[in-house]
Image (cartoon, rainbow, N blue to C red; front, side):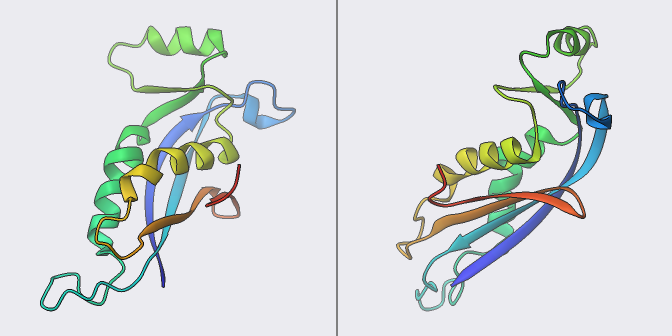
Length: 149
């Protein structure tokens, strides 16, 4: 059985070497979808009986590990030195640094890597993170799927 929980957040970024508008500082209303697989929980009388995982718990983990960290932050490539220096000059500004430009693809892969250990087999039901889908816009997204390199 597979379940998916969607969360949304706002963040800024730029792709420094991009050929078009994305080289400029701008922001997006991102959406993150977390897809898990597992057997239905069979514990009689448990609050999560007949579920893979309670959707509120899926949300809580994704929020703590990714969404709350990235929300209303500027997602920056650490080698984009002028932008990183500028952001550092803003008192109390929330900046998250990445080892590659913060493309939808890189953000999806990073979110998958961060979330995978958080959704380990928690209930003995073979729970597993299957996919992270990151929407940069309503029409553009990237998927990282379990087993991708």
